Amino acid sequence: MCKRFTMLTWDETMSVVRSLETHAPLNPVPDWPARRIDAFPNAEVSVIVDGGCAQSCRACPFPCGSSPRHSDQGPHAANGSLQPPLCGTLNVRSLRWGYPMPSDGKLVFNTRLERAPFSALWSDSFEKRRCIVPVMAFYESSSSEYALNPTGRKVKQTYRFGRGKPAGESSEENLEAAATEHESSVETRPLLLGGIWQDDRFSIVTTEPNEAVRPVHDRMPLALSMQGALAWLAGDAAAEQLASSDMKSTALYPAVPEQEQLTLF
Image (tube, rainbow, N blue to C red; front, side, top):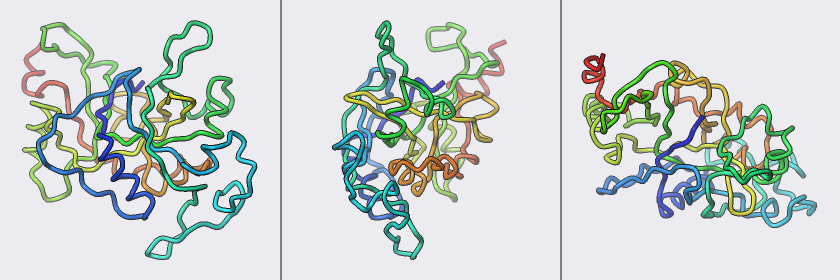
């Protein structure tokens, strides 16, 4: 269950939009000092939605000709490869994390990919209103490891998952930075998480864990490649097959330094 992630600013999210629309590589996030903010359920977050007819009408009945719902053809990237088409340009919206349950109003903030097409709560959004949630990292708690939080309380160990610095930079510096102040983030490229939305709310879609997350948790957010993100927004049911492959080599960053954890018990 994902219930915490490090969010991007509005300007950074707009930069991701420009990369997606031009099929350009994701630009590294600027390295000026900035305090990163973690989002929790009910937080207001900048997310990316398809700004075309998929957003303006629920059933998308108009023959716009640019969506896979109407055509098997799409725009080509600079290298000539076929890219997943979209109904229109991409927009950034500020949405709150979590759908209120109709029965009691409690927030549900994760959506299982396997169940979404068949759920009364999720199916309409899954079919018609998908979004991308760009984040610098997400967190998962271990089911078997424990640590002491800053107040001395014994809690489940928490791991931070992100892409990390490009190859060639010091891994020791990365680990030291992650172990001290997570806002001094070691990640330089955002992750693109698949989500769904309705009105002013969104939920993060979860799936089976990859090799990096599996030792910690049995679920993880649907982390997509750039091509996978475009396919997801376009309503491609197979977009989950285009998951971000570089997540598999992402280092795990414990909530406390490893040398301290060994002395806890």
